[in-house]
Length: 289
Image 1 (tube, rainbow, N blue to C red):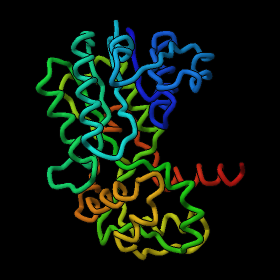
Image 2 (image 1 turned 45 degrees about the vertical axis):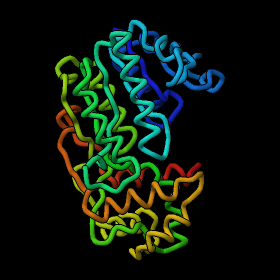
Image 3 (image 1 turned 90 degrees about the vertical axis):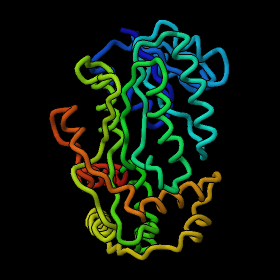
């Protein structure tokens, strides 16, 4: 079997590559990267790295003779950009006759979700369904990983400030997500045409509950005092991400990011790491380093 993965030097893509090595040889995996010189470590590890652009013929070359294509979207802040990219992906996959597409989704895909990327994540399954492709979608909850580098700021602020009102958030770690992606990609019985999996931990957390866990992990009192959405947007507008982030929490405040699923356990045969255990392990490791 030949596999192709996009985003090989990114957060999720690099984790997926590591997880795939448990099931297939590195030489069976083609890695799509935007800049080849940034992928020297992957080349040294035996991956077939290939420079490509979603909007050029190099995408067709990446997908040639591919059995399973793991599509991790490129980073952008609006649905139009991602939908435009995805149309190129559909066209290239059909042209290359890719046997199966495994696509990354997100739980903020509801029709009434104000999140800036909800239209893309809602479009993803509908567009695949009307295509001629065989596909499986894996919807992620929020990644738990950004909480680790964010924790020192929360300790200084003494508050969780997400504008979430009284609603809850669901999380999954990048590592657990990648493990599930690799297992589905390499398992005929899990790689079911039209199947949509949702990856979350075993429970969700209100902001008060999240504050309690962060306080325990940090050994510092952290309470919940939500910031005004506009202030939050302006505070975290680095790289133009402010509105996207505030719109995501606007969806969360409507109760649209609190989904809990047992799909991870069904795929892997064991529970995902809990939020508390994840934070305790990774925050202590960060502190040691």
